[in-house]
Length: 110
Length: 121
Image (cartoon, each protein chain N blue to C red):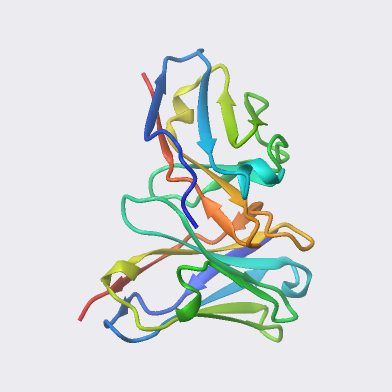
């Protein structure tokens, strides 16, 4: 299985909105509503930010939102804050009953 | 609250078997699916596989021939064995709960802190 495709890096200024894409195929992202997003700060375990494409776990800021169109899922962060600077990963269920992660995106808050 | 803690050797010799254990507290290991995920230094996350109480497993196809997972309900633990390791298996290994009823949902809501395993002679 091939890793989902994410941009290597994105950046934005405080207060702005950014979107991170996660592109797969009809056998993973496009075929199921089981896409999750994770935030990872250096040296820390990943933190669940979005699950099932667009659902936020309790305690996650509503500045984080998820969506999907075709074979591409997206994570949008609005009102960018300094503490949002981190690596972000998507994952998706696959038609082989396995899971695949994206390569990760480094978010820089300018 | 739910907590996970990885344990095991931090150094494994090439061609040997990497063995890790994840101890779960705050919830019964019987009631969830449990995954292993790894991350080489400076690189992305890779799902290794998952296990359920009934010993139902799903493995990453790229690792399937070398991976074995098991559950010890008496200790509320689950384990990972990865055989014939090489330097490419050097990574931080995480255990995590997949909050799902069946599908490999990838909704990892609780994670261990991670354990660095280095493969070197």
